[in-house]
Length: 149
Image 1 (cartoon, rainbow, N blue to C red):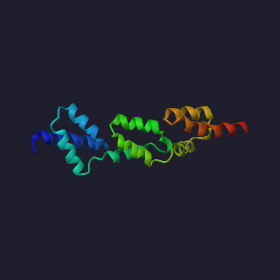
Image 2: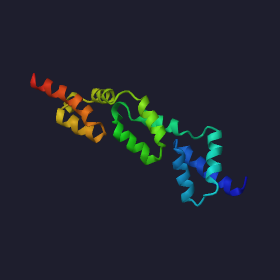
Image 3: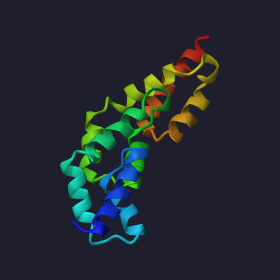
Image 4: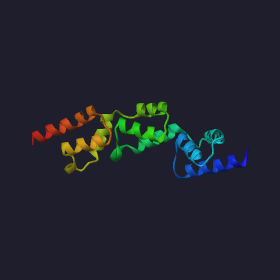
């Protein structure tokens, strides 16, 4: 393999040293540095050594968006799409996750009681990309509990 391949591989490995990356992120970084002919061979080398895996990266992003950092399907799909995850990979990861409502309830359980005011919870769930249906299912019991106090 030529020296251009070695330089491109070195750049790709440097990108991977700081964090897992989608193949498209590695390809974009190589393109920005002027490598075009080497991209396919570099990605193939990384795949053969199991140094890149779009599925692994997508699963890691989904895991990172749980608990206090939980987000809805819409938000997670947007982040994965923005980072360049393949559509099939995104669909597979979303299918493996617990239902959106369970993730929203888990997030709600991390809040201090003073922060569990229904309007505040609703705004934060919207900001985290949860669906309108999930928000309604989470907030309605909070409203009912407030009325019985």
